Image 1 (spheres, rainbow, N blue to C red):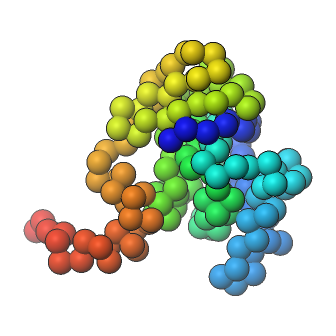
Image 2: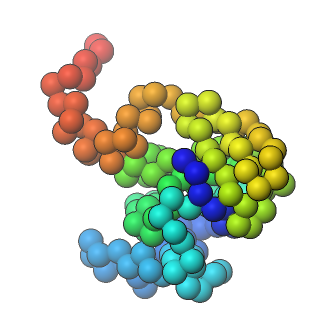
Length: 165
C-alpha cells in the first residue's frame, strides 16, 4: 500500500476521528472525519493515502463508525505507535488495515510518500529513502482485509472454516 502520509498525534479518540454528530443510525458522514482537529481533512485525501499517528490511536468509545469513516474517506492503512484494543479489533473486523510501528512519527513527516508492506511490516519512506520495520500482518488477518471485512470473509469462506474442538 502506497500513499501520502498524514500525521496525527497521540491519544486520538474515536470522538476526534468522527464526532457522534456525524453518525445517524447506520449513516456515517465520513466527510467530517477528523474535523475536531483538522477541519476539511476529508477533502485533502486521495484514495490510498495513509494515516500515521502516535500512541493510543482510537481510544474512547467502541463505535465501529470511527474506522468505517476512515475507510470510507479513502485511507488505505493506519500506522500508529499503538492502538486502543477495541479500535484495533474494529478496524480488522471492517477490513481497515492497521499496523503498529514504534516511533513511526519520528520516521515520517506530513505529506511524505510512504509504502507499507503488510507481509513484512516494512514501511518505506520514499521521500527520504529510509525504511523502518513495523508489525507484520498474519496472512489470516490479511484475508479479512482482502474480503472487505469479517462478515464478507465469513460469507466467502462459509463451509471452508474448520472449527477446532
